[in-house]
Length: 313
Ligand SMILES: [Zn+2]
Image 1 (cartoon, helix red, strand yellow):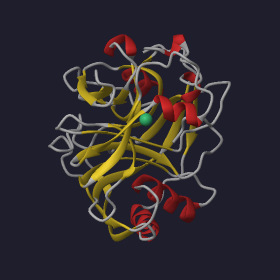
Image 2 (tube, protein in one colour):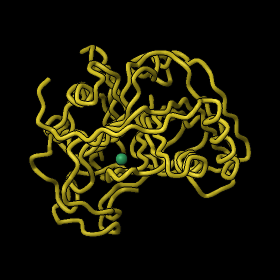
Image 3 (cartoon, protein in one colour):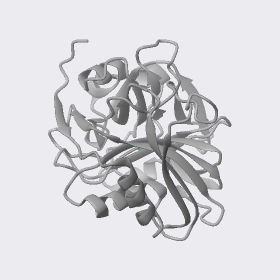
């Protein structure tokens, strides 16, 4: 597919899986009372509650950081609304037809409003568009989770792309949180501590099996410009979503100079809740299980030329 989007491709450090599992275990023990990490064969992730668009998350693994918060904040860049296409991004990143999942902004042209997107499409198969969106409902305080059967999206996304094949993955199970970090930050910092200057990128899917988690949902575009994190917080709708939640996640241990969002996780469920994951609010009861793979490289697509650090939490 022809595309005029600029792409910067950079190799990432791919650790030995057993070594990476050990690094994750050691780091996660600073945040959770119970931690297990193990290299396993990826289970069939098309099954509920995972409900991925392909059986696995392996094969030519990469991350894509598309656009960015500067296209949303202080005001949306009109040319970036509905500008991106998951199949186009998969091709640009060298995995045409690949599985694309992660966190991004839906197209307001398709959905009728700006909102959260949980991308989950096998781009080789038109019947495997299993993405969701979460938007703010009529009352202004509730989540409306809906299927999103398109490859089109807007403004920004952090995506894991692969052939969607089975293969070796790292299974991580944690419970009983005693530290302050969220699950993803704890994993990211564990890898940053172990691998230092080397950038390790990870894509994966996890379940919040028990407890509840603080989410946000972007409402429709703000009528006034957003100039600070406080403005963004006042604009977003926050709420607590209940387990079980399926979460689509990407993170990098260190930004190799590409102006990346270093972690981004969106969740959906089979009970109408979803959104952008911040942290669980039930530390004593929470339990997470996930499957993760290191990415071989990262593609920075359509990087904003004017940037800032607002709205990256
Ligand atoms: Zn988000």
